[in-house]
Length: 393
Image (cartoon, rainbow, N blue to C red; front, top):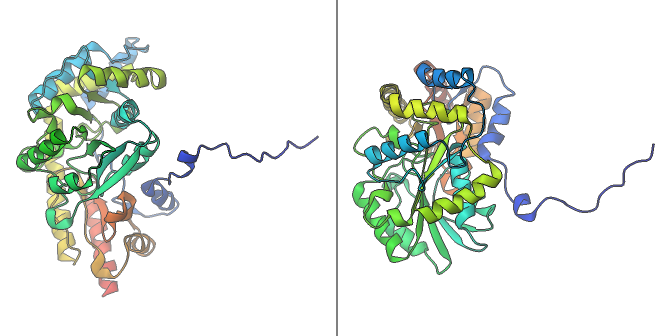
């Protein structure tokens, strides 16, 4: 049998070849090969999706709801989203042409960027940040430009830092508050200052508010609600975190009609529509899921209080996250880098935390520890981490 000729051409696109694999996923390839590991790494709720939401999906299957929906999503779900966003974020969106149901908020972010970015456009974002933001911009042939946030400001984004980063090529600013991985939030006054910078420089804003319901103190503020901002904002949200629906892969984007139409054009040729089964479950979550959501948030609050207090007691300075279910302790007192700390902690004590550098260079000196896990797992992880830190003294 003759051998196939060896190709000399590299068929992988240059802009894809330069994208690194997710630092989180690479680290957890190692974790999965080990036994007896207590993981505080994956950003997934430590609760099963509430039964009545799962039951809505089962009901949909049993009654033959297995076909396509409108590219926009079912009108029933879009109407429910409109009511929910109006009540909770104080922005009104028309369900007929300003709301698009997506396959998770990840797809919403992807199609938003693909709808707005021309090659060479600069997109600003704050760092440390969720691992997909920079690569998502790169995949659209845009230029991702990080703005560092700092522990002394509780990792909030300062308007003056945004203003200083703007150039004639800057088109948009991406926000994620509460933030993964730091748990940072922003006050209403800080959000208004950001809005003034965006208006003055004619910037579009993409605001990913997936953790908004998991705000523990004070009030969550959306930049979309600031006067003059709805017209220049794409509001991104979903069901994974607040309603413990990660596996359903259901999210949405809200924006003025021209932007929604642009996103629809990308969505209809890539995903077509979100799963009708997931959409039926999401509708149930919005209409009847608040009690469970508030119960889960209270449990996260208790776990947050414990883990932050514990980190500080064992010598790892940790600010109190106001939202999300992540803590971001400072590990520089151990004399280790973020990666060294995470790898050695995993090897010696079988505890998994994500190196801060997985979320950008400014994450160095920190690790991300999720407190979405059961309290018993968090207690075990803290006990082992304390032993590890003592061994470094």
